Image (cartoon, rainbow, N blue to C red):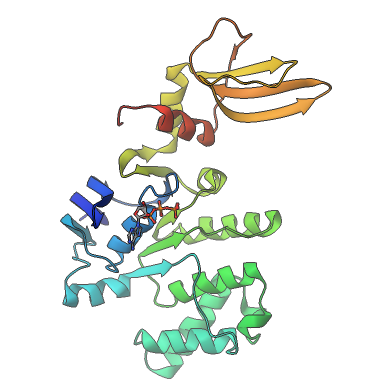
Length: 293
Ligand SMILES: Nc1ncnc2c1ncn2[C@@H]1O[C@H](COP(=O)(O)OP(=O)(O)OP(=O)(O)O)[C@@H](O)[C@H]1O
């Protein structure tokens, strides 16, 4: 049985189609969910968690239908969801917050609950801050607490919306290590705009834009971009203004401009073919293609 199965799934808000005819089977691993603003990432997550119902199609998570009342409860035991802005009571301690959430999720007796809470704190490296009130925690600690609350019932599937948004570079690195650890023994789906998060933590990527633009190993996507022969390096004396190019990276150094661009081989530029490729370039290349992959 696949972890996640979507068959002809669409989600419509009034006349707007957020998702259209999604067909997808996810078996295992750490999967990065990428797509531009409004691509339908949050809508997909909410469908998987049973917060919304699909307008059309069928969803199964571990064989369970997130829309069916009885099955939804069973699914909640197997799923941990970390929204972008989880709401906690600012005046409660981190420990009390988790203990309360463990209680709500039906973890009994008290000794088992305490054990689950302590283990969750340990997993996210927050044990020494457990007695702090929520308002005393830094942004990074709050993100850790958000993960801990999703781990207390040891779910098989973890869904995280924008895990590193608002974190400073060193906290972001620590967070990526934590995500790697969490992915060792469960399926993790990470929705993000930060392509680097996906590159460093995931083996697979799901690129969404109302439909599935790509789902598969990152290495395969990088191979596709390599064979496209559309990524170039370019040095100029003037800033580049070429509508046929998408600029993936740029630098100004010693009076010259250096670019990595995606586009056709235009002979009026001194283009050098790129020799390696980033996921960000592969993503930009894919989004520039009109045909669906
Ligand atoms: N509750 C809602 N009512 C009406 N339209 C909605 C609702 N939620 C989302 N939409 C619309 O559906 C489309 C997909 O939105 P969604 O939030 O799923 O995208 P997203 O990929 O998560 O975007 P972002 O990266 O900006 O968070 C957008 O056009 C959005 O405006």
